Amino acid sequence: MNGYKVGKNYREKISSPNISGKNLLMSDEKRWFRRIGSLTGKSILAVIASVSLLALFFIFFFIIRDALPFFRLEGVKNFFTSTAWYPSRENPEFGALAIFVGSALVTLGAVVVSVPLGILAALCLSDILPFTSRQYVKPVIEMLAAIPSVVYGFFALIVFAPYLQEKGGAALSMGTWIVLTPLALVLSVILGDILSSRAGKAEKKLRRVIFAMIIAVISIWGIYSLSDFFSGIKVVSGTNVFNVSIILGIMALPLIVSVSEDALSAVGRDMREGSYALGATRAETLLKVIVPAARSGIFAAIILGVMRALGETMVVWMASGNAASIPEPWFNLMEPVRTLTATIAGDMGEADQVTGSSRYYVLFAMAMCLLIFAFISNMVSEHFAKKARGMSK
Image (cartoon, helix red, strand yellow):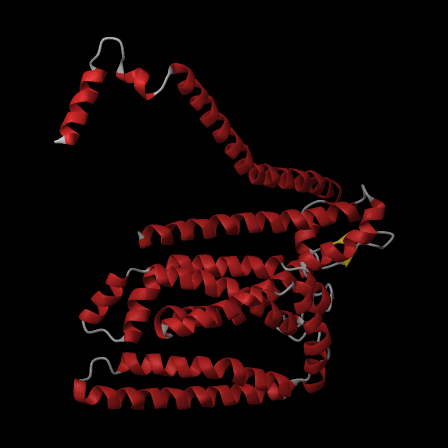
């Protein structure tokens, strides 16, 4: 009743010829000040948001500005096809093919180490481990990203390289068991689950155990053969592709685990429940439903891991051996190599004294190649990340 009276009085006040509803809400002067304030706030936020865009533009501009003179002075063909890297000679040569190959080998090795482990760890975190265990395990993995790269480089140079050089094949053999054994066990459980999925309820458990044991035995035999082969290898220098690949793989692991786990967790609970309702096992649900649904996010995580490995400087400078040559054969991971980032960091101090020469401009040419590759990779990862976000909605 009181509310009715208040509403009636308000309508009478609004309908009064002396007071309009517009004046009651806001005067023209206040509205003008509010519009100016809103416009000013939006402008300030737009300037802040465009700072990163301007920074990216200026980085591209200055790198390309100092890279183009090298190609005008020395040409393009020798830079990408020759392996003769003698920048300090009287008649210098700037063939960077061996350096590009070194970067590719180190990055590929890091991907081989980090991608399988990262995706399996993400699967365990999202769908296998209990929620309470995940709350402890994931922060520990992410702490690896907080360790400075110089600490990783110090470990690779002072601890891992001498051990690799002294123990050689024994270290490789032990590393084979450490890396491949958990993978083989997980694989045997998953494949055993898949192979026994068509059996009846009474036989399913028994067949699952039998298939898992057979696959595990075959895997262990394969690991034993591989470790036996590695045990005969003699390592001449501990600073080589293998050393750097292991360390870079560990450095890229937190990024791949975190992004992949987010993508797997973003897959709707209804898809999991629907799969279980249709009679699928956990392994079938993971491999045939969850992973395919999250593949865009997983692929984005892999690209980010590749960029992390390719762009790393300190570790490769300290532990890659810095030899500007292609290993023989090219897949020999026990040979030292030189990478683009290590060359830029190592030669910039000397090249800075000959500003304006080809030796100075060639470092910017390498930086331009790295920048273009990173930019394209970032665009691709953003495309797949956007697809993953769209699928999660």
